[in-house]
Image 1 (cartoon, helix red, strand yellow):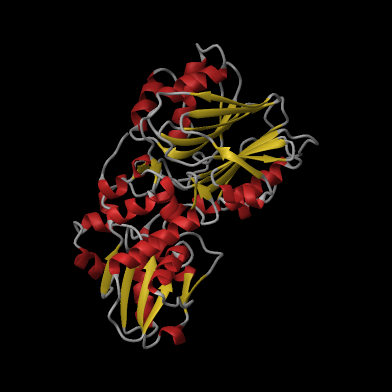
Image 2: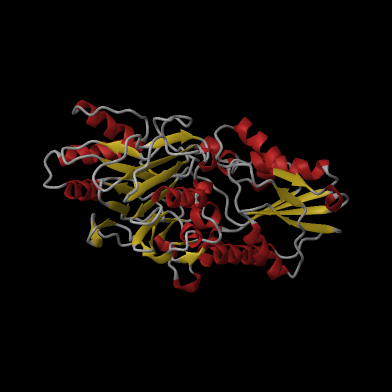
Length: 458
């Protein structure tokens, strides 16, 4: 999972790009990068990349011309290749016979190593270990015989097996595309006389840009002096495979993703959880949402059960998202820095913690311990999504079964509960999740539930 941004013909390209990246920082915290063009060539020092957060990016390393036509940006959350690697940071610049282009990628490519090995045999030289460069070099290889770079891109994307939302650019054109299954989101906005491409609509709101529409699955949008042009690639799919983990956890609640506002869906998940679990039988209960991603699911639960949520767990907002940190020790340290309980509200109470999902369980175990250390007499966990049994092949860093608590415990809720050291644990059912997805006329068949049911399309 990563965040991508592209801007074209706005008054302050670099600042607009960085502001957009700030708004999708939650999608990746390993590295940040920007590439700029004056309309004729990419600026020296493109791409400018650093390890860390957008706030760590201090300034463009060099003089900026008065006129900058376009820029692309990326925040990285590593799912393939070395995590802490400047070589794997994006955007990347790929050379072709038609000139260079930049590529910034959100998604993942199953078995991309085989494609990399084939390209290396054909003479390709790689500077990174990321699947993004494999996709870029595939385009460069196709460009050797294609009539135009655009043709090369369309031909490669039509056959490329992977989940992707891409922001690319030539020196004079901004390009966005999504794979034909639509795994990852990508939206189009208008700002002044220019255009914005971005992973989530919350960035458009922040930039005061007008939301136009989403890039369609299997569509390339090509933006240049002639405006926005649309091209289709690949076979039309009978059903989409939009990632259900986007609205459950990854996307910001103030974004519109896959045609639906995230906050509304999370509230619906909480309401459905309340219907399934029913009344809890404990004295002196206190209901706490795990901030921030579970706040709206907890609101839905509280509304359905007619109870009051207590703000007794405070999140430190200058810490990073613990789920996407690399390594258990880093995540454990991150939890202690990220959360602080309000002891006097918890002491002597039976704590009911409401969260959006339970993946590895290490973060939740630390939270349960925090509750007990601060005087909780018992802890019940309510999870507003089903148990995660299967790895993700499409961009979320839960790639092996041994990373998934539900898989390790073979779905035995009592053993999962023991691992996180809670007294009770309740999940939303799989059928309940699908029912919520289908509200407001959406079709569950157009979402990828592979992490829950193991039904992989790619």
